[in-house]
Length: 85
Image 1 (cartoon, helix red, strand yellow):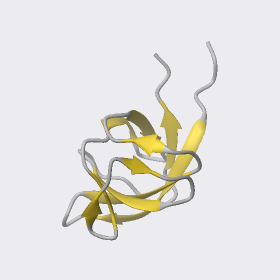
Image 2 (cartoon, one colour):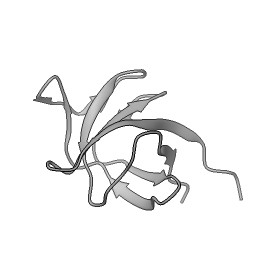
Image 3 (cartoon, helix red, strand yellow):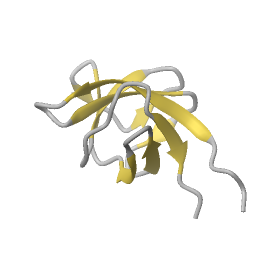
Image 4 (cartoon, one colour):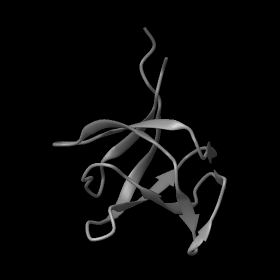
């Protein structure tokens, strides 16, 4: 099986909001599933809500830092991988 490709990382986490700031190295669409992995983090997250500059967006551009609502706690420098079916 192919190794999952790293597509981004967590740059910040707002625990009071349950929102992670994610920086992607390729465009990512709303509805896409990503695998968030770190020292104590390991879960699959469907991107259901994505914001840039406090406005809802459908696609995160490459290199853009966007806010994504997450179901579990994440940490800075956690890595984001694409989900391989």
